[in-house]
Length: 211
Ligand code: SF4
Image (cartoon, rainbow, N blue to C red; front, side):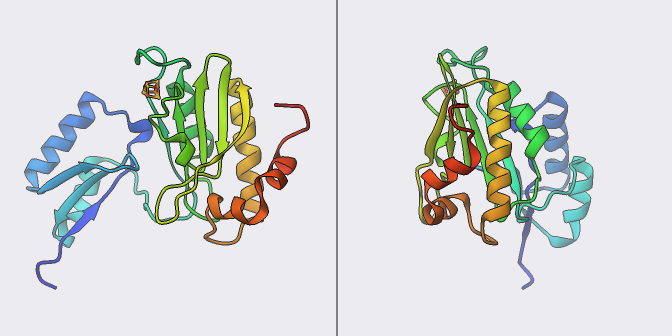
């Protein structure tokens, strides 16, 4: 189709934009007359409405790593501003988000997997609707597994409370490892938990009395 247009959607790590990145985005968008630049719910920047032939050039000029948004694995880690920046913040979500992103982003999984870390129970990162969701309370981090939005939404199950940063990292690894080894191909965590049951999952991923 002659009028068909294309988009690219590079991920923005931790959703953090720098002045340099903003200038580059403005320069490239103006140069190529890109009609729509939009932030997606997955913390990607969508450059929409390009001719196919300029796609690669735009991507190179933006300087992003090529990261397909469709592969099966950990797609993104969201973290809200958290304690030092938000008046409601109880815990510091961005450093935990950075550690989580460094450890798990891109890790292969049976299906797309999303992680949301919120600095307080207001849950601006929709932690109850993420495959792995974490939110801060005065007593420590609460940990949720198996949530998702989409066509068949599921509220994740709260499986641990009062965690430290290191305990969140450890429990995230246990949960994702168990899910990766036992879920069916393309089975999201929500459907996986529906199938095996949250009690069975907790038995497998948590040492008794550890959390
Ligand atoms: S979740 Fe809490 S700390 Fe994070 S942005 Fe929302 S209100 Fe602020």
